[in-house]
Length: 442
Image 1: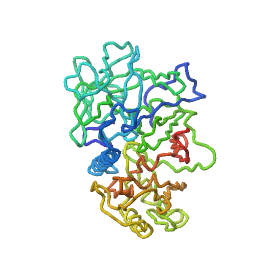
Image 2: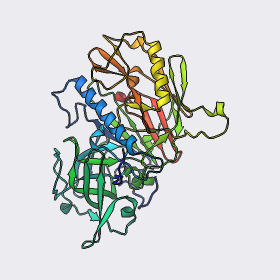
Image 3: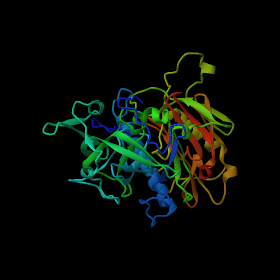
Image 4: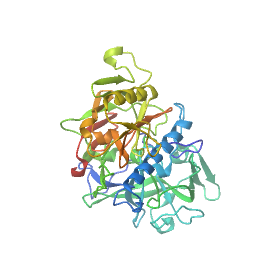
């Protein structure tokens, strides 16, 4: 996600090293729940919608999000724009002392963690009570001269208080404006033991507008920038986090899991890893997709080093991995190669998408899994074998569509393709790893 000139910002470590409190040691790590906005556990779930309607809404959010990214993305950009309602997963955490529990959108495509706060001049509707910083003994405003204030692209100085204000604006005219502060964030792990991180830089929003779901109070920034929660956790999580996303369209009754520290290590049989490519903006996690295999056809996006020799390709870092986008948006040339290959191999009758969103759909009644070709995503050094529900999606009772779309300028590896994979980010090794996993049992 990304900003215009008004950024939001989430591996440089510019603040103190935040150690988890004694409840959970650094040696064990910890895990938390992730709740998909359309799952049975979500406070944003609209039970009046059918499965097809929820699919349509998720796909539309994908297109809106990637369109915003594509419109203003450039390799020289120093800011990132997010669409708050495009985030697909909610993360539960507590803020302040005493703890106040809330839910916010977990977003690997943004940096700054912010929530709505009292007093709120203009706020979007949320189900949870607004956070009241005056009731927290650990809330502290950030000074105008601080590293945190200087790390964000658009800030202002309240001369009377000497404190730093932030402004974040989005392509759909959503925005958040408020005070930059430090506060204690507490994550309730799946072992029921709380893990607290003091002095985390956050945004306390007093003037907020946009198309946020009522279940969310703001954003949890999990990107790679200077003020992200991941960066600020620093050595206490050994530069590691991971998640395992349960397919949600079957209305799974369990939440997905996000892991930190030793708990986040992806190991064992079947693990493949690909390098994280250092590019700007640092918020995004750039990977290199070299091609896609459809059935027995291997289609190249970037010639692998074994073919091109030792010369570094200009297309290194040609796709970002993102937890908040449903679809996968492929580089244009590769996308059209995939479309042609799927058309030639799927013998079902081709139809138009009833929702008008996806370009390749088939008439589908009953279980057609055996009629679909296996698709493998070839990242640099990592071949990821995808299941049919990673690559095809039902947009109505009788329509099954390829869950890929054409990228304009920025390609995205979305969360449908990541479901039932243990996906691990390791900033010490500078890799992202994939392991096929039944995430409902993880």
